[in-house]
Length: 419
Ligand code: CAO
Image (cartoon, rainbow, N blue to C red):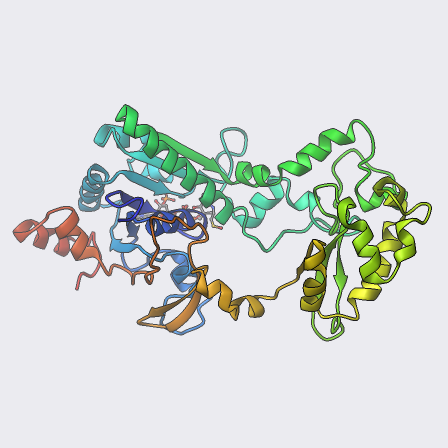
């Protein structure tokens, strides 16, 4: 038995943010029915194509454990089928541009009337307010949510991060909202509307920087390298390079081979508790007692010197050797792993965090499995559906259409080219 077994999800999502949410629901055992425009489907099917004629990795890696039905939701027959799906499903998830669902004739009010038990979950770029009508993509959310202004180096421009905190981050937030609403429905019998804005989700993930914004009103941020370097603070949280966010000085340092390998680096943190061990490991035992080096506040204006010395040591070791040497001393270090190294990591395959999936059009590929492990609800990652692969199955098995009615629906053109 899977945690969400019996829960039917009408998946009206596309691109990345919404599909990450419904993929999680699928992994937890829900029956996810992805509604796609006939003949077109989710735009990502044909974006960043690497195998001609096959669904792209962009699509396949975001749409595992789903069924696909082609349905024109602007056509009268399509609307009738969509209404039936809303009646049958427990959850409707969508991430259309603001107002798109209303324009189709399916406002939250109408949806509630059709099925008062349904949980309707929406992702938009912004919450209510002056930007509520904007279409939004990942990097816009990273910028508007405060992440970009606090990422990068002080003397460089704002930076976006490779982690898709705007899309996948919002999908995660929405997923939690949906499961919470289902839990509340157990008691009230009623569904509700769940909303997650990408700006809000990014801000939630960037909350330590809003913490620093308010601390700045009380004085300089002493744990930032900038303080030790004697550079004045402005009126907003600055970009902090690779400083650690929690007050313990940390940096990314070169390791052996950095001249050839762009990822031969390690993260290195010098927590107060392990400072003496760091001194021994790098060969500077006198720093343990040397004036100006003993306590963390003493060292704040010498962090560049300290890390330069540690780097002299890390450059004599590979990033993995640094880890092997430092771990037994509880010195927090972390190798900078490339995507190549990650995709070859047997340990990640063993836990199901990485999976190999077989696809009829593209063969075998690697994907990220469910990163959330439930001891009583195992996950089997199944391939993404082909466009409209389950149209007939959903019309007959889920909605109960048969005979002439089914024939009329299929010949109407509202459900694509049914095989
Ligand atoms: N049948 C008929 N019409 C359909 C359909 C179906 N099955 N599925 C979608 N459509 C229609 C929509 O109704 C809409 O029509 P109208 O513009 O006439 O109302 C149209 O297709 C396009 O939908 P869209 O505006 O959502 O798509 P877009 O490509 O123009 O915009 C995006 C994409 C992502 C910017 C926008 O959907 C958005 O802002 N979503 C919310 C924020 C979000 O999730 N962003 C993350 C995206 S991942 O980076």
